[in-house]
Image (cartoon, rainbow, N blue to C red; front, side, top):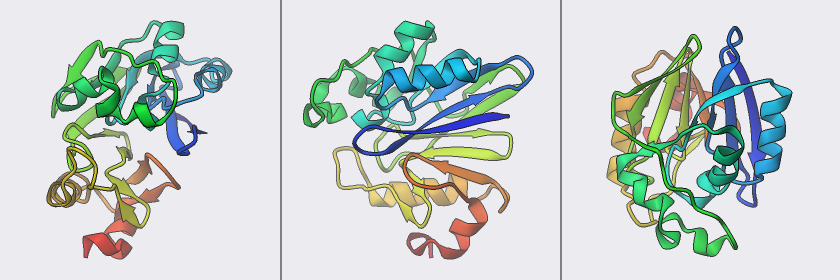
Length: 205
């Protein structure tokens, strides 16, 4: 699996390029800002972008959607519950981030959807709590958790659509059951593992 991590925007969000090494088909996860930088990385890695996937609808994860879709022609995907956040500046919090061009999603995702890119299969897990439509993406021995689970922490739940009860349930029911060695790639900060978070994350004790 080809994996490239880009830290983008004022909120230092992680944008991930994930691709099949054989076909070079892949996805862009959370293009939050700095579209030209993301597109340069796509070109450097020689990735054929099949999907653009948002783990949720906040501006620091969707801000470069329009730029990346226009350049690659790839469809934009987000969970059904966060679809309106790609349309409404107040819902996405983009009103607090200056001039951002929001992009309508091409497809709304649901729990259990599977997205294929080359030999890679991305399983969609609905993990609400940070937002109503937050998702995590499981592929191979990795899970991309957006702003649901971080190394040593969890996503904030005090914004519209957030729920502390839901986010804890999402983590415990959808993420922690994976093997301890499963790699966790969050929406901000360093990577971790399921085992490390199960043992040391103070929010999960």
